[in-house]
Length: 191
Ligand SMILES: [Zn+2]
Image (cartoon, rainbow, N blue to C red; front, side):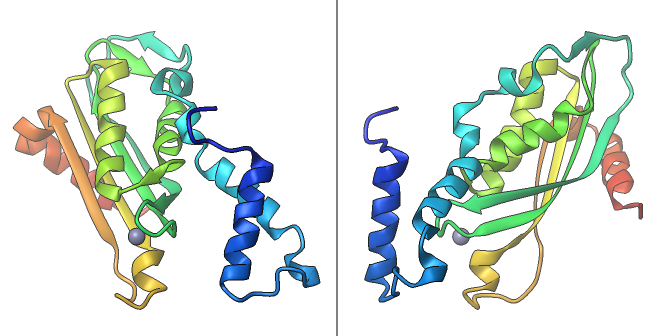
């Protein structure tokens, strides 16, 4: 436990106080146990803090003489915005061009999850996924696009609907317009 971190019991007591503070009868049957459930849920949704990129990838790195684009698209993710602790959710599209080392394909969604399970900004999460892939594969380039709906905008009535799109292009995806165009074309194609 780091400084300031509290036990689940202590956190549940605090959430009980939040409910009371909101004027909610926290003793009514439906709410008994809610503080404890909220704590368990938040622990799960922030477990990305207890993990690093190496944990997510494990030993699924392979020397492979392959230098074409690898694209994993439509990876669903669910995260919490750090400003309101409300969900933002959508799809991640990730591509890289290897330089002699590839990562197991199933590890790319795990990298997305690693960063989604923290309190996030969509912009930062996009860059973190790209930089993690650079760190583990040292590729020729990485491209990440995130499309998400933000409940903090929709539920609070700031804006209805609408997708927020962020992208991070590194290496050849930044320097070579054709690689970038090919990636954007691949992720736009209907499934
Ligand atoms: Zn927000």
